[in-house]
Amino acid sequence: MTPFWVSALDSSPHQRRHSASQGRKTCEMRKIPTSVWISGVNWRIRRVSDKHPKLEDATGHCCYRTQTIFLDKSYPTPTLWAVLTHELLHAISWGYHELDLTEETPVNAVAGELMNIARQLKILE
Image (cartoon, rainbow, N blue to C red; front, side, top):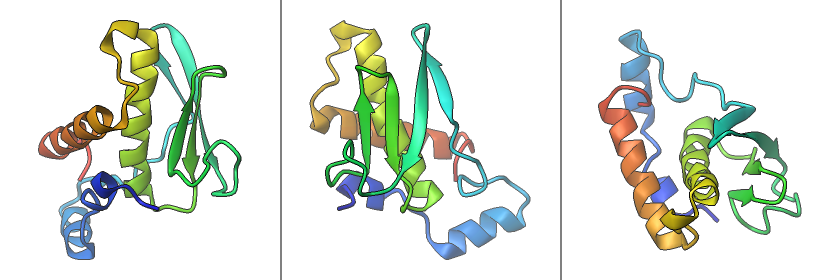
C-alpha cells in the first residue's frame, strides 16, 4: 500500500515531459544510490522485491542493526525517491538519538517537506 505522502509526490506525465523538454534532469532520470554516509556510517540502499521479509507490506524499511535501507523495487523511481527520503530520516535519527524520529507521523511530515524543498531547488522535479 502506498503511503498518502508518497502518492502526493508523484508528478503527472505532463509535468515530467515538460521538465524533460526543458533539458532539466528529473527525479525519474536520477538513479537511486546504492549507499550513503550518515553520521560516519555507510548505509547500504537495496532495491528488493515486495516479498522481501524486511518490507512486511511497506514500501521501505530502515534496518538499524545492519545499517541497510530496503526499498520496494516495484515502485517507479519518483516514488522510490520519496520513500528513500522517509527512510533516510529514520537513519539520521539513529545517528542522532536526540532527534527521536521513530514515529511515522513526524517522519512523514518532514519527508514530505524535504521533497517539496528538493522540487523548489530543482534537485527533483
